Length: 121
Image (tube, rainbow, N blue to C red; front, side, top):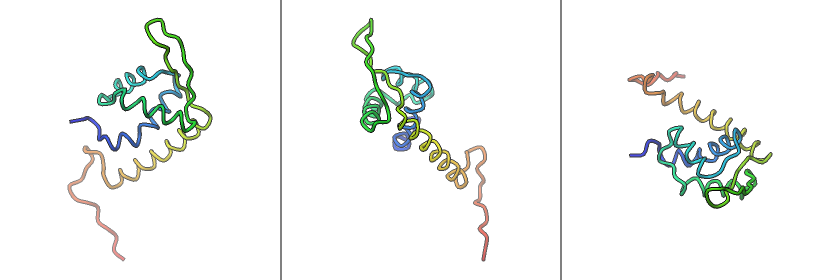
């Protein structure tokens, strides 16, 4: 069983990629390894590369080819100005969503056995 729900992860992948390349210009395979190091072990090149291409196609990432001594040229990504704006917007929306969901679904260590009482009118 995967560690993360694929549908939830799909919704957050663009935000994750924008953040990773905003801290360090990077190429596809290295980004996959970094995501796996953070605990997203189920992510592979087959998921990340198309997402990078989509972000580039939307004008949110800029890319440049850099020669490699150990194989083909690597495509390095960094956010564009629009990508930085989108990363900030998506980050605010993500935190708002997490905060709202946490009001209903507390972390397991804080979960109550009964729901809070509703105010009556």
